[in-house]
Image 1 (cartoon, one colour):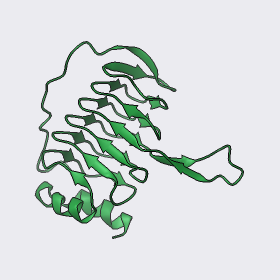
Image 2 (cartoon, rainbow, N blue to C red):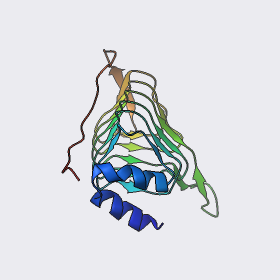
Image 3 (cartoon, one colour):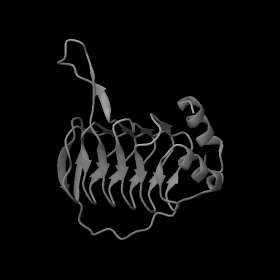
Image 4 (tube, rainbow, N blue to C red):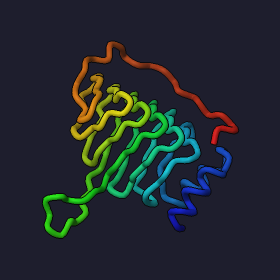
Length: 169
């Protein structure tokens, strides 16, 4: 199945039909996860999304190098998650990839960019517009470009996201 067709179909299908598309594409998406329309997938397979996670509109999910999103994760609109790029130190500008892991209860706010090889540990928060080039420790808040630690997340999250809206494409 062509990626353009996959990306177009995903945005048009109602939520109850999307699991069939995910299965066809060898994605491992929990039935309680919500992936809004307008998401851009970069590959079939190599994508796992856990229970009760929400991925909002206009998010890039570059799953070419492998992307794992844990349980109760919130990814806001316009975020970009990359697993592949070019080696700027290579004379032939070869591509290189490295998987990304986003652990349980992590939050990625609008417009943030997550680069290949990054792990967002449990409960961490990435502020809007941040560019994350290094892994983030559990329950830490990062922001800026490049992202820097700006403090602890002073809670132990236990929320449920449950944000499936029938006409939110």
